[in-house]
Length: 146
Image 1 (cartoon, rainbow, N blue to C red):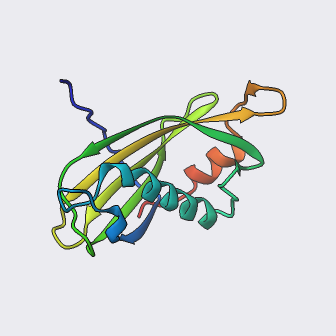
Image 2: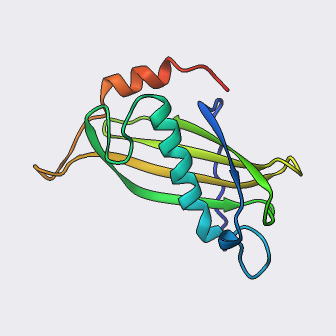
Image 3: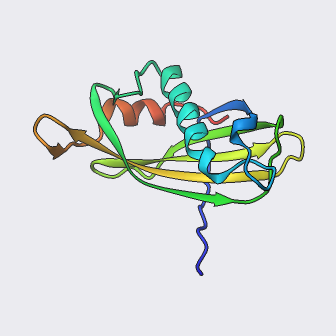
């Protein structure tokens, strides 16, 4: 079976922390792969809020949707441990971009997970794909590395 391998970008734009809760632990007594996406979505929301966006439904007055998602497990993180979650925006296309997340266990300093989410700008009313807002690209390009 071929394994997913997510390449990290040259730079990240945002970092936040997450303390692993008991409800996020699987039968192996470590962070469940099923819980990684909700944690990443929270980090994504915090990042977009830091840019002044209501990222729940739109970015720069444009709706967006997740069209694909990949996760890559790298090492275990146990209950109560804290993750540093780095967030990057990368790989802009005409109508899409990717959020890339790197989860680092603060105790072990090892990567725990990587996650990549493909996002598409979409006009729900007219049911058509939209271009990436130039204001969003400019804002991302103006950010400093963390």
